[in-house]
Length: 200
Image 1 (cartoon, rainbow, N blue to C red):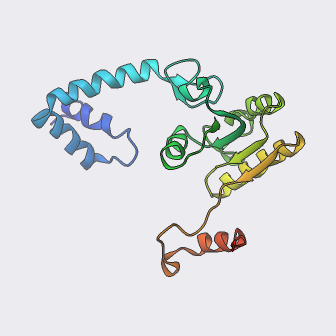
Image 2: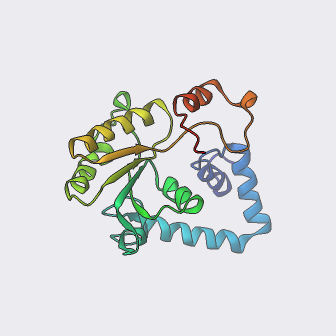
């Protein structure tokens, strides 16, 4: 097989996906060509449509086919709560796992000065504008529990404090059903710091 054959190009194209190396890409390409050509045609058609037509919501910055996403146009959502997350995938996770009914703001990353990612790159100027509107009473910080995620949460909580808006942080710690002996030290330490009083 030549280095730039159509089959090789197909396999190479699958490698753009996260976690897909050459062997997995080869299996994907062979599966489509040998067992599911109709599925491959559908995938290619929808992939082109999605890349051409899905952008970002102008208000919350999640993925959307329209200028405003369905969550932002839903009048049943609670305007006084705003949950700040890093990615559109985080919005989906919260919607599927919780009964949260407030609004969202998607950063599209986290502060990382070494990588040249500052407040403007993650839309904090736009977030400041939303906070200035005066509707938000609680800002829920749901960034990931990484060093950069924690720094981003702290920066945003300072923004909220300047506007006299309450900032809360989602809890992190021992997973439900987890056993302490198998929990890593950092997670366990975070769980102890974030402990709360048990109601009787």
